Length: 452
Image: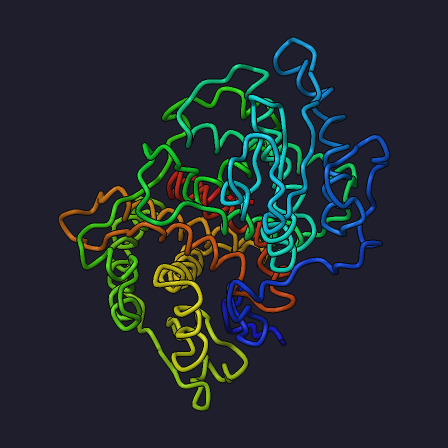
């Protein structure tokens, strides 16, 4: 795809490069020679050690034991006690159960650490092969790293409600993942890391789950946030987790109709209504940032790709979403691309993509001359700051827009998945884009102008 100087193209998306659904998310090649694995001959599992999934698991277990042997004493001031109760690769349909499981249902579609028996078990028939097929090899070590987080909690006698324990384990998993990438324990590309994040998103709570639910694991936003906290800041950032800190964002449905629709408003309501709320947001925020008034965009062009509009003197036929600088409008393919994003990602995926373009418009009007990738990340951050404004309802006198359960997860999915080949070079990896979006959600609009 050629770059058009008259377009702010930091968030351009090509339909041909998009997933057609979560089952189509690509991952690593499943050739076993693709991973540079540590020596794992000392790890014995209960199950078929020749299974390709178990081969990855064994490599992960070997490194996790070694890594925590160093990290645990530095974090807690006492020696690390390796997991010794056994490692169980379970085929639920066989009827053979690991310790702590009383039925096949306990392990089917699951992986767990059992503190009473000091055991780690995983479903090698359903869960891990399915995750590997959809999200690549590296998601398997990430799942094991999460379970090791629970083993660490047992050794540290950590106390907290279920959701706190789960997101702290995600944080520990992120810290280990950073080591695994940096030290080349596994061969992990930026795309592989994005796929692993998408896998974490897949394991989120059902939208509408209360944070106080005994089985709550956290929303996708909560889980990805904690993973990235550990990845960026190490295990020290995970140690002081406690109930309510960090806060989890488990939102209730606003009413029965919202619940019935799964939190998704109709497509036409999103593309027609969200721009009004974004205009309202920027009318208040832009003067605070720049000292200049905000004037409404000249338009939103929802176009048929067979009749793509001009931007300046150039065609936009190769683009499905863009902000046109000279003509001051946002354009998007309203026949194939955006409706497809809505079907695959939900209403807030579309809202978030529109918000990134408003972010580009704000940068252009502010005279920002950053290179393309930095501008894209700042626009992603601005999309997060708008989301925070909606969550906090701090424009109650002028905005009636609300967030539904699962919306933040849809935003993350949009930034991870809805992109074309080569977009990562212009926009940054999905992992980085999600970080920028989270920065805006958590820290507000002022953080975005510092985004690098």
